[in-house]
Image (cartoon, rainbow, N blue to C red; front, side, top):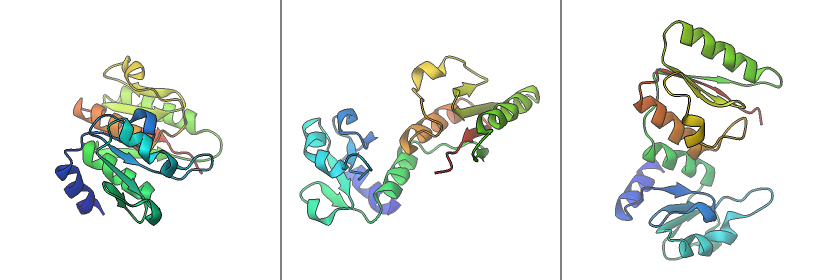
Length: 173
């Protein structure tokens, strides 16, 4: 699937992706995800009206010009995010569980920071990055675990700034 996405991104000059039709940028790609409250397939036309060049769906009945079928839309979004935001740090540490994720992530950050490691954390407390404390304003994080596009965008950004380790809260569900 990654090869297919790479090829289509090249053909359509895709430089942005979204699964929210309101956030589609002109020339971007839209991923129609069926959720518990809304079905992204109902917003494909809206995404095109906002300037999307291409849309992806796992609903074969929605396939038409520039609407491409994929077997697993959530995997497609994750792969697409990795294509646009490819940088990863040397190590990533995911903390999961019912109680204590935020504390454990904070402890890891403090220890690594004291050791002089360039570290960033993501989670309930937002983005904490020992190279720049103003990044929370740049990246709006309001969930324990951000969506795959936001996560990859942030990780790519802080890795480009020299981050060696990212510690993040991973929601158990």
